[in-house]
Image (tube, rainbow, N blue to C red; front, side, top):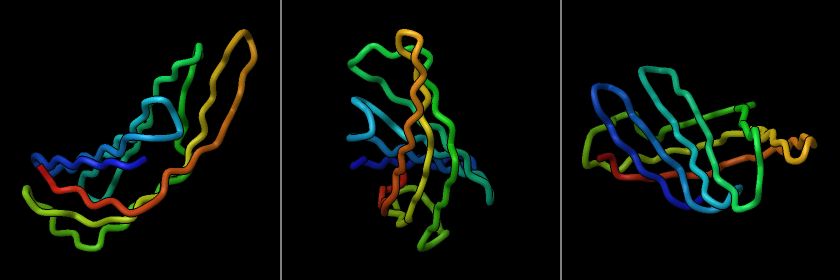
Length: 108
């Protein structure tokens, strides 16, 4: 995934990591409030897939600086591992994916 966006409002930081694999069009949404953060992955595929869901297996987010304010760039390292479970024509397939790397969006 190659792009990252950040918004900060009422003490909540929202990050969106998108563009590129593991899907045709996918994004990883991260919500950070206080010392906790939550992840959600979603994707759309050009091939027929039904009952597709994603389970987060592990996650880690390390900020270089915790000073977050609008208009300022944040630097962080992210690692999220998840499994994708999909069913097509009665066959269930499970695949593991990992999104990992540095992000540096400007907070809006």
